[in-house]
Each structure stands twice: as structure tokens, then as C-alpha cells.
Image (cartoon, rainbow, N blue to C red; front, side, top):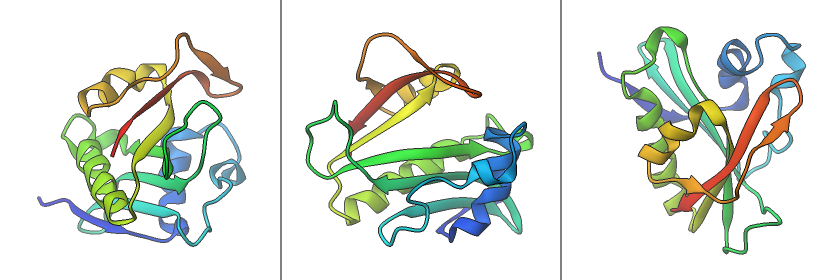
Length: 147
């Protein structure tokens, strides 16, 4: 089965965000600041009508990053039934290509510590030493890469 990658509205990604990233929180916790900004990009990977993997990309600065046109990756998730098949990787690279079209130069994000190795395989690296805790979610590390 072929994965179809496309840009979608916020409403299409919320169910998978809730299922994977915020299962024990109210649905309202799945709406992030900037979701509806005109330059925000939500990417979905679908097989037929099944939503398989998602990611959101925001034109957003970070106090520790001096690169021009920094973009933030947030809300990346793959449906539990479709893990370890490369779909998250495909969504990530589709996002990178989309950001290149937007003249993005650098990507940063707060990665769950449990996902850091996945992002390292995609060419990302830690941008800080140590981890920090996001209450209700867990330990994270600041990561990034050139686009």
C-alpha cells in the first residue's frame, strides 16, 4: 500500500495527535498556538482513508537559535498500528522539502527523549546538553538540523 503525503488543515491531524501525543489529556490540549497561522504547514501521510503519520511545522524562533528563518517541528506522530514502517521518516522528509520551498534554513524542535534516536537517524542533532521536562508529557531534548 502506498503512502500519500499531503498538506492538510489542522482539523485532520487532531485525532492522531490526541491518540498518540496527548491520550490522557482533553482534546483541547491537542490544539497548539500557531496551528491556524497562514504559514503553518500540517502534513499527513495516509494510506487510503487511514491517517498514518502527521507532523506540523511552524515559522517560529527560539532564544537559543540564531539561524535565519527557523522553523519548528511539533506534533509529529505515527499511528501505533503503523510504527516501524518508515512512514514517520517519509512525513519528515516531505516536510523538509516543503520548508525548502518556503525558504526555510533551519529546523528546531523539542524531541521526546524516547524519540531522539529516531531524529538522529534523520540528520538531526542535540542543540543543548541535558534534558528538560514538559509537565504531563515527560523529558525532552532540544534538537535541530539545517534544512
